Image (cartoon, rainbow, N blue to C red; front, side, top):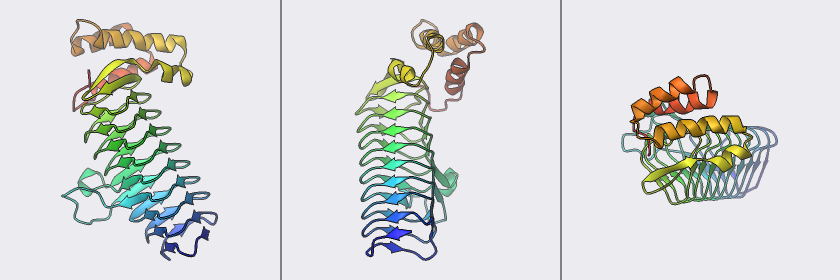
Length: 257
């Protein structure tokens, strides 16, 4: 381990031999950091926090801090971070709460830009991009390859599906299905995230299936219940469509329209 003389690392912390700790950073007793991770200056990593390999923490990141929840009474809870994530300046990552499952989880290959906040009991998938000052309240789920624009706020318990694109300065109060584009306060759907899907190698056949499902669900005279039934009848066996439908059927907060 390489650490600046001004850094404070608790003797109980478990750090791989090639971890680097920058000036004035503080690493707490219950922290585990994997190989190749770099912690910049003035960072605080505390609590029961597990960090994978090859992550980058820019200066003034706070990770593993207690949840901002009035029901939290100091009980042990966790923050689990995967590998090869980038956290830019002033990102804040809170631990979970007992009533919310006890764990905040961030996957692999994510890019969280400056001032992003991930609150207690959130689950962030893999390859997610959150632009500057995007903010997650508690108990939120973000699917793989989702993109959240800058200054976007997401209400607690909301789910955002895989490959969804949320435009900047949006307020998200209900679930956003996978594969779509949405923007606004409150967000409205604006079709599929076609640019994102093409960039990720979706074939024309896969995209056409999703287009038809989207039209039936959100661009027809059918109720959502009727649209789901028709999509299942006409597009059965298409993996992406089945994921699209399953996400909508599992919604508890309702679907952004």
